[in-house]
Each structure stands twice: as structure tokens, then as C-alpha cells.
Length: 351
Image (cartoon, rainbow, N blue to C red):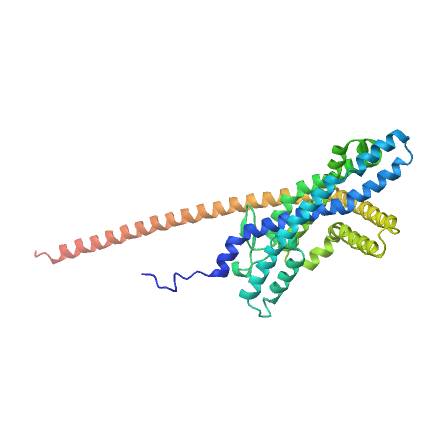
């Protein structure tokens, strides 16, 4: 019969287990919203300004038609309203989880850093991806993998999974640059092509941010990982710093400083794409080495598996050998006892 104490549920553990997929999804959606706002607030205005400068050199007929296409920003405003609304709806859920952790988790010095992490998640909910859970023995939750301890093995596994997708996403920047700079008239005339370029830029930024957050969460030495992957940090933060600077300028003067706003945005986008190109070439240079390491690691896993199978077989055969030897010894012992009994019987019979 179970006692009341044995039926008691550990509420923080239960909440951690049930909320992990939900909170991962919320952080994932928040990061998508951030990538969309990077495009709407940085990439779209920069392209519009660049297109207007390009149209000054074009015939008047094409200029008038293109101005109509560029001035149609109703879809951008609607999308911005939707994304901001989703962001504001998701934000309180992360704050509520942080408040729950502040009330239920220990404030001991050894666990105080997790309370500080909760404050960081409130400021930027996308950082909530793969947060460690003290309730689950300091493990992290990943879709398709479940709860895992962050270690070198998990990091190598994730790096292998990210390798090819990130290589292909970094490769996207080349056609984006070629189309935007050499087919600018076609891009201006075809809104669908312009949307494709902006979507590609958002996907590239999202992919770099998502990979970095996941891998830095798994890394045991986070500061060392950040120093090694400083280029990813710059790629992620350039749009944010540019936006903050442009907001300061617009507060100073909404009209007279607008040209400076667009220059800041254009500089940020050019720097962002240059850094992505640099990252792409670094990935190309390191890809062969990474592939060789990945191949050797798989070979090592196969060898270790074969060694484990051989050890089991050797152990099984040794057990069989011991059992056969024990049975043989027992037979010999029984034979000796039987012989001694026979001799004793013969000697005890009267002549």
C-alpha cells in the first residue's frame, strides 16, 4: 500500500518535463519574429533607399512605375503589426516561467546563476532555447533527442547535424548578392523576386542565430566557445546595433536625419553580408577537415561497437568454458567418491 508521501508529485520537476517542448517552441517562434523584424527594419529600408538611388539614373517611364511598386508598403506594415503582436503575446509566457523559477528554485550560490539566466531570458526570450534545467539534473531538452546532459559528445553530434544545413544556408548569400546588385531593375520590377531576397536574408540571419544559441547552450566552456566563434556573434548583433543607432537618430530629428538613418542601415547590411561571406569561405576551408573528422569518428564508433560485441562474445565463451570445467570437475569428483566407496565396500566384506 502506497503512503501519501509516495504519491506526492514533485511540482517543479513535473512542470519542467511538461513545459520543455512548449518553451522551446515559444523561443523558436520568438527567434523567427526577430529574424522577420531584422528584415523589415533593416533590410527592406536599405534596399528601398538603394533602389531609389538606382532609379535616378533610369528613364522617367520606368522610374514612375517603379516608384509605385516601392511605395506600396501596406503588406510590410501588416506583416510588421502581425509579428510585433506575436512577439508581445509570447513574451509574457517566458516572463511567467521565469517568475515561477524565481519562486521555486533555490537561491543558493551554486544555483544562483540559473536565476540570472532567467532574467536574461526575460530580456531576450529567444535565448530560452535549450536552457539547462536544475530540476532535470541540469540537462537540456532538444526536439527529437529529449533530455540530454550538455557535453562534448552532444556538441559533436549537434555540430554534425548543423554542418551541411549551415553550409547550404551560407551559400545562399552568393545568389542573393548577385541578383540584388546585377539584376536590380528586375528585382524592382518584380515584387516576388524582392520578397525572395528579403526572405533569404531573414533565413540566413535566423540560421546563424539558432545555431549559435543551441551550440553555446551545449558548450561546457561558453566563454571559450564565444571567443572561437566571434564571427557568428558579430553577424547576429550587427542588425541590432544598427537598429538602436537609427532609433537614436530618428528621435533626434525625424526628417533631417533620415539620410543618415539609411546610411547606417546600408552599412549594417553590407557588413552583415560581408561577414556572412567570410563565414561561408571559412566553412568551405574547414569543411574537408570537418568531413574527415566526422568520418574518422564514425569509424571509431564502429570499431568501439565491434570491440564491445567481441568482449561480450569472449565473456560468453568464458562463462561456457567455466561451466564446462565446473561440470567436468564435478564429474571427476563424483567418480573419485564412487571409486573410494567401491574400494571401501570391497575391503569391508568378510573373507
